[in-house]
Length: 537
Image 1 (cartoon, rainbow, N blue to C red):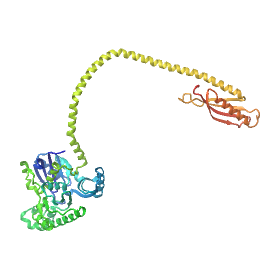
Image 2 (image 1 turned 45 degrees about the horizontal axis):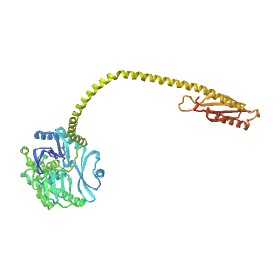
Image 3 (image 1 turned 45 degrees about the vertical axis):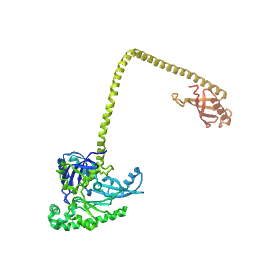
Image 4 (image 1 turned 90 degrees about the horizontal axis):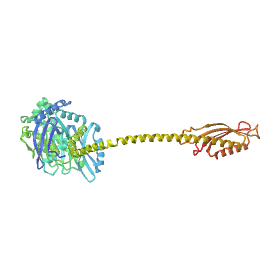
């Protein structure tokens, strides 16, 4: 979503600056309000709890009279920047590849940092990706201080992309250039090329000069800071500045060699110098002599329209420290590409919800407005329908009473039918039992010398869907061998008896036949008779 106004806070190690920017047309920015506030930056006395940060942010808010969403440029010493190469893959797979590379290149667990990435260059086979990460607790402290001061963090930008946006907006040259933003505790080194950019954060800042002055001049930190920026003490500062420039030149040379080996970067044609450390007298000339490259002071306010309401904050006097501030405004208002954002996950969710709220409210309003006419129409129809329903209900009330009486009569009739069917079934079963017993008696008489001793149900007659089973026990007498084991003829007679029982119209099968010949002259037998379901018992 394109913005027409953006509030940006540059959070450095030794200062805070806020700017309210708007679009001035033709790709230019207008600075509507500006304020700057120093921060105590003495080494060993860092603001661990964030109280000094909250006070400085409160002072900025009271001076610009602004509360609301802001984009914040993080200090360089809090941000880890890495450049990696990944294969050119689909966007869906790229996230997994980049996350794997982040786990390998960020020296902390990903749960302990806030990180993001952006593509800074590409070839036919590879993509050059910038990884930026910041410790979660440090970002949480900063966001909490912003919220206590009345600001809503909307984006947390690393300094390198912000510096790159400022350089692109001011310099029209397409040649390779090196931008140095020298802060109090770190230096952002940015190599810009036509199709890509590379950066590195050096743990070398203006406080290095201050610390050397403290040691050489035997003074405290505040006196060394004042001495460093005094025009009358340049002779005292020159040795410290010379040593600082030497170390900085060595780091620049080392970084250029690294960029050249990693991605065949071209040597820069010029160096742009910005940041609070750029105000050291003679630093630019010393670096130019050591690097053999032209060194120029970068003016981030070039091309920026400054309103009279912002002039009271003296932005021109702070121009050396405003490169990241202007670059962040350029990203928020004019750049269409998605910028790196190290915002906390919980604030990302809040920001997503906040952006959707106007659309949600508009959708609700449109829905309500669209539903009012149909609701009014259907309400009228409902009232008319209720009136007609009441008239019909008065007519059909007697009919409903009669219908209820008929239904009760039908239920009684159905119950009577069920009882009659049960009685008929009982009557039929009684006759079937008599028929079964008579049939068994007839078949036993035909076989002779056989009698039944026991007959009992083997299954409950109430089992649904199961045929009735009757367990029967009996004996057969062997007249020819009364004192010896039964003869084979007796087995044949029993088998014939069971076969004839199967032929009975009341029996469907005979199961579980068992024989016992242990008693001399008598064969004991058991079997289960399965009733025929066609003639239930």
